[in-house]
Amino acid sequence: MADQAPLLIFDGVCNICSFGVKIVLRADKRGVFRFAFGQGEHGSALKTRYGLPKGDLENVTLIDGGRCYQKSDAVLEVVRRLPFPWPLLGVFRIVPKFFRDPLYSLVARNRYRWFGVRQSCFAPSPEHRARFIDAP
Image (tube, rainbow, N blue to C red; front, side, top):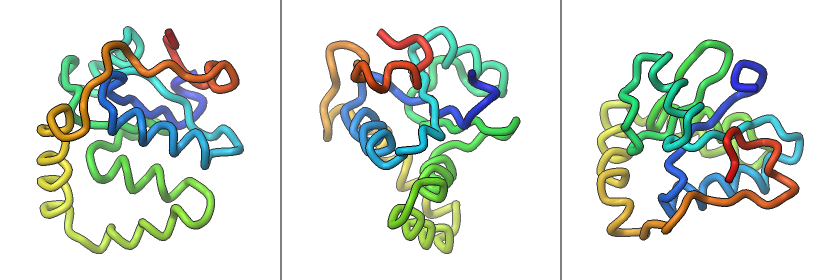
């Protein structure tokens, strides 16, 4: 499944990450994206395969067509593929990566303190469960 569709690897216990996944699920009516928990076996294995630190849960990762996107690039790539009006957020690509990524990292480092942490990984609804690798 990971090689068939864009795969978004995220921190399953992070509230802001889970909120973002819910937004993608709601907007992605065609079911383009698949999801994996960074804490899960497949998410960890894919990060290792792409040379990323296995335990790194601070960075959302999008894998598609052999390419790996992280941080703000991953977010901007996801919104680009969602239906209108989400691609309008692509305007932030004009902001240089050396500005976008430090801002992303600041939020990522503080996400648990600012947005809270779940006691267990995000549980997809039954209708979305098939889009998750290693769903609980």
